[in-house]
Length: 588
Image (cartoon, rainbow, N blue to C red; front, side):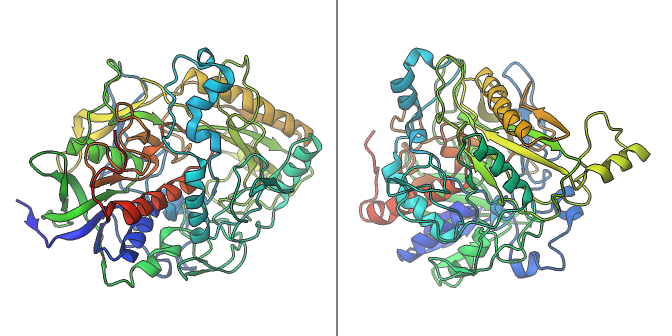
């Protein structure tokens, strides 16, 4: 029996980017907010100080910032005919744990999605005809558009201090920026980062081939910056311990460096860490959330009543909580009915590795979002007529920093140990670079999320089951975009280059990206979506579910800026519409 706590205006599940943004906005509105975070409290000074932050064994190898699989994990399979098995260690993706969530250890690449992506099915149908879209794909529009999203992208940039160069400023194309981006209302808050040798070399080769390279938009800021909440950050030092690590320099934007320092000072905000939410509580009608049940580290259950419930955890936990709470109808791929679990998608990682004899890239210098990119082969920026696929990828060189344990670049055929391995490591460590192409993943009928019928967590709840494999559409796309990357690599005149397009089946072992999306998607039709354009549940008006779980499919960009924009969008709708007149904000 759960012990009932005093009622609050709003309870928020998860204190990563989305939850922190919404908590800050709702407290500004005057609401009393209680936030529940499964992991511990994280703070830069205590957790990521200069003496301990650069610890590859602790953070990259032992994954100290990630969710413990003993706490919770997933089961995985490639198709519905298989029996799913649990992941015992995180390989393919890295869910975060604690305040700040995965935003603590993210790379910091901060793209906005292009305007066409928010109406992807309509866009492709209008341009190529419905018959051109591969039958396996279940593409959907988002139920919103660029004009609605851009102000909230701008709000996120101003909180994060995003560094970069506008390519489309108020409809005017700007030299040095990304010409394919949607029209921005303002320039980036901070200037582009200075570029190391590898990205500079890539940009020169791409420019000579007629492409338009630009600095990758980055949450690693380039100069001292005080954000829209009055929180000050410092410039990136290119320390090389960024992806998988917390930032010791207050340079990488995350909830703990940009929002929580302001939020914790508010008397109407309460954070409860190491508190795992078990389920959403409903009233007798099943159409109103009355709060949540959570458990503390001692195993005690508590009920937190609230007028408003906001779920803003990692994609997997957002969807799992909905399934465990009976919110919406569980998706059935056979009958193609139900929306909870529908349209799960990932990303498609591709790369070309280049080995040189006459280069010194100083690879230990870097950052998760330091680099140069091109977008000519992303999304629908190139003509897909007759190619047999849709989608594309963001092509870029982003040297994250060659860590001393994990970075051993050697050519194919090199032994995995011994004197020859040592020789090749010495020969190639300084003179190897990679061009990556992080590409789209489009939803299909048989890629979905559900509750596992066999495996349970330590609290007796079914694990989330991931059914996913790369579609033929995405595999064809991967071959195509990688061939284009090879052309640029060849122009850079390496001694040897090795192409690595995504191929075969999804394998959960090697890390690919944490950009898992979908499962509780947004849209304009409650028959095919779970939340409306304000991230409000179609079935339960006082329940908002915010995060990458809302994406109907994944374009060739990193998702975090869009997650942040959606959080600002949902918070604005709650403040300006829902609080004044509680109920559905969009009529079904």
